[in-house]
Image (cartoon, rainbow over all chains, first blue to last red; front, side, top):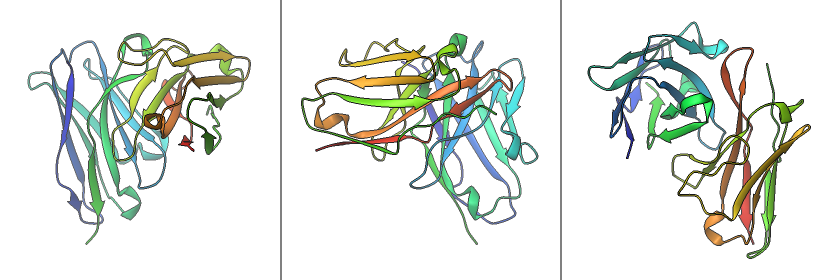
Length: 118
Length: 108
């Protein structure tokens, strides 16, 4: 059974960089795309971006200048960096796998709350 | 960019049928995926490619997609179906997923 687990600081200061890692277990990391999605409290899902294990990335336009998503296949991990954070970046952050053939996001991590505050 | 629209809420009595819609321009030409998110939990894929169910999802859930509307139907609604439901499509122009705003299903 494929499992994803997010890890990283739960509190980040304004203007600093949010860094999260997602560890994949129970299945291969290769050949898939891997996504980050966030959800502010009481609001809907917002896709941030995804990375293919080939290294190809795609980011939401409004976040593109601040986002980097990378993958380390040797560690079965992929990561998110979001720079210059503000309170508007406070959210639960999820990592997820993109199913083959674009068949939806078929596996999700449990999510991790990141609060931006001084 | 492509936009999909969902009603904010749907209410349904136990044992009845809930229909959750997802509207978009010619959405019938796209594949629609649906997610269930119970309070405090991560989303779960409950329908993909319009009408395919993952193995763990009960047959009471079904999906359809035609014209400008995709629909997730929950038959014989149970208390455990109370959750937020999100539709999602891929915007082929940008190769990015687009989520609907979500529909809160309340079981009366």
